[in-house]
Every structure is written in C-alpha cells, then in structure tokens.
Length: 601
Image (cartoon, rainbow, N blue to C red; front, top):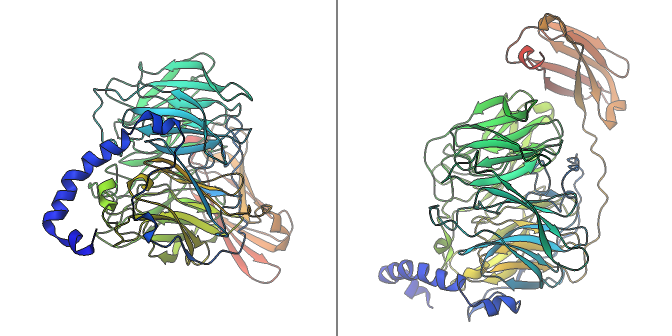
C-alpha cells in the first residue's frame, strides 16, 4: 500500500469503516489455528521494517530499596501484572540486552496480558478476547499451550468497550500456593489450583460477591492484604473485603468510579484511586474497609484520548525508598503526584508532557526515588495505530528529592508507546517499553530499551507487524530467564537474547530515613510521646542530627541520633524534620509525618 493511497481522505474514511470488521474477523479466526500453537499472523510486508535498531546494551545496574515479598502471593516478579504488591513495575532480574534477539509468538486470538510464573517456571496467564477470558498455562520457552481453563464469558447485559474493559480476569494474581485468584465477569472470585507436575487446572473455591457488588457492576481487581484478607474493587466504586476461611464479605460504596488495580503494603495499607480521589484504606476489626485518608487530585473532567476513565489512569504505586505513594492526576497537562502514605499529605506535583497532549492509562514505574511515566495521548483504540498511524508519545522520569522535599523532572524521551505498561530492569539499568513508529504502513511494533539514567534509546527489536501485535494496554513482562513477554491482540509474543543475560545481586538500599515509634496510650492524646531516630545502613556516616518538631529543637551528636517529642493535638499531623551533618561535612534533610491524634486513639 503506497503512502499516497493512505493520504487520500476518501481512503482514510474507508479504512475507518472497514477496520472494525477486520478486527472482529481477526479475533474470530478458527479454533484449530489456536490449538496448533501457530505464530501470530503478520502482513505480507512485515519484514520491510528494520528488525533491529541501535546497539546491544551493557549492564549498568541500579541499586535501590526493594519492596518486601507479600506472604500470601507468589514471589515478586512472578505474582501479578505489576511485579509485586507495591505495584512498582521494577524487576531485580535482567531483561534482554539486545544480543542476538530471538522471537517466538503464540496465536490465541485474545490479549494475553497478565503474565505470571508458577514455582515450576511455567507461565500462567489470563487471555481476554471477544468471547471472554480464559486461564492458560504455557511453556515459558516455546509458548506452547499446556492447559486451558474456561472462565465465565462476557455478560450480555454488561455494556463496555471490548478494548478498554479489564474486568473479568484482566487483573488477577498468583498466590503462594500457585493458585490463580481471579475475579470473574459474574461478580464471583474463583480460586483455581494447578494439578501438579502434570499440567492442568482445577477449581478449588467459588466465592459469590454478588451480594455486595450489584448487578450491572463489575469487579475490576482483587489483591490480598498482608494478613491474607482479600480486598476487591468494582468499577462503580465498591471497595470490599473477603474472608477466605468463612466467605464473609464486608463492603463500602465510595460512589466514585474505579478503573485501575490497587496496591497494598506491609503496614496494612490498601491504596485505591478513584475518578475523584486517592485513598488509603485499612480493615476494621470485622473486616469492613475504613478510610485512613482521602486526598483529592486535579481533574479537568475530561476523558482524553488514551484514557479509559475520567480520572487518574494509574494504579497507585507504593515507593519502597520512602513513605510515599504515587499516581498521576487528570489535569492538563497531567501531573505526577506523590503523597505521604501515612497522612495523605501532598509531597509534590510535577507536570509531565505537553498541554493539550498529555495523559496516561498505565501504572507508573518506580525505582528508588525515581518515577517513570508514559504518555498514551491519542490512543483511542486499535484503529489508531493501523495504516501507519500512531499516537503522540513520550516518556519522562521524575525524581522525589532526598527527604521528600519536592520533586524534579530528570529526562524526557520522544519514543512513542501508545498503551503499554513499561518495566524497568534494575540489573540492566534499562526501561523496557513497546513502541510504534509513525508513517510505516507495515505497522511494526518494537520492544524498546531506554537507558534508565539518561532516557536515551539504546535499541529497538521488532516484535512483529500488524494488528495482531498491538498490545492494547497490556504490559511488558520480564521473565525469570531474561525473556521479555508482551501480551498482544493476537496472543503472546516473547523476545530474548540468544544467550540469557547474567543476573545481578541487588544490594540492600542504603538510603537514610527517619523511623518513628509511638509511646503508650494516655487519656490525653496530646501528651502521648513519640521517639524518632535515624536509620539506614549508611547512618555511620552521620556526625550529628538536629530534630525540629512543632517549635521544639533537639540536637544529638551521638549514635543512634534520636529524639523524643509529644505528639500534640494536631488533627492532620505534623512533620518531624531532621537536618543531618555527615562526616564529609555534607548535609541531608529528612522529613516524616507524625500521625495525628485521631489515628492514635
């Protein structure tokens, strides 16, 4: 197809009419082709674009604080779409370095987005197509289908855009016993176990949540808290818990739509973003969700092209390097917003991308104090990236300043990633995204590696060409052997080096921080005391510390550099500030929010 043909307005209108029918035909290709494990089909000019651009990468590891492993989920990097319970999208393991890239794909006529790995190294994934979702077990090397488990089909009464509806299994997780915990289209939660060394699935439990999630609503995501209690969120704004042992459910209605997954931390926090606000919840004594704090964010009330909701497009991400949680808002341009996860206080808000061309519907990537965001502006659906088309694009990195004293933008990349969830490999020092160039009518899609420190494009490896290789909001997933997997409309594609890259041991983070501990309960909350001390592996480099809290100043010249204060009667909490003098005469400023009296009773 020539460039002049594409430029003709009559032909462009014709493409818009024909593409939806072609898309449906593509997804309804014969079951026989799927069963054969065929590669995803490409167009006749698929090889007209470069197979590789750039140069192979050299490992430059990044060493940052890591989220703890969740006791009720599979190990980090194996359990869910966003890598861990904190939803960091950061892998300790390496991805491809671009050395002799090899490619394999499995045609499923469905988007196999949420890739997890069981204890035997097999892929467990939910593939969502027009007819509904299926749970699959695949060989991680060949992508051959080993087992299939049919999930409830799409419900006729539930109206939704096929390409922006992630309920019914789009978000699921693998638990610590290799069981898939899957919210279904019928407002149930299934527990599906494996049959052992012989590949297969068997349903163990079926929990009916229709008593708290009403007809017409859908469960968007479900994750356990650190105690093992299951939390779930619905698209209409229901937030609830499920006791696996008794089947008892408790729920509240936020009356605010929810379009993304959520995060949980090891302090009992559950972080959920709605179209109106960012929340931290905790479970009450009977399991009922309780709001710890609620912080609104800027929202211009528009669903920009590339968004699936009229609000934040990000799953909240808990930042292991500090007491922070981050999302993007729905301003114009959008902002990376960071909150103190104890109090909900705003730490910083930094605009990203350009006014009139800025939005994202992907989780933020977090490594230490660094946040990487992707621009999805213009991705209105699969037809947008057909016939040489693409979106606005851009990726940017924002860092939280040491001690949480604001944020700053570090770099910008012009790479165009229409809708992928990026990942960072800390072992390689690379950010992996999935890009689509403009003007190439063969419609190639590339696994693209950016230098984490500078944002420079290191290499691009073609994953495939045509509609079947459009990822449509699915993530890049880095496997245990260094393979990069991408769920696409045709199924799943894997790209790997000819020789697996070496693993790099992740050192423990050395960041200095403040640790606050509260004394016994007193009749008057304001007289309750708290102690604060400096922690971190490099605390030996501290020469002295000056602590300030609510007008009081304490100086300490001896390890462990600590102080004691009364909480006071503040309703919203106050900040404790420490100014550290290091042995090299440099200064470090640390802050931490002290819990208000209302949270200490």
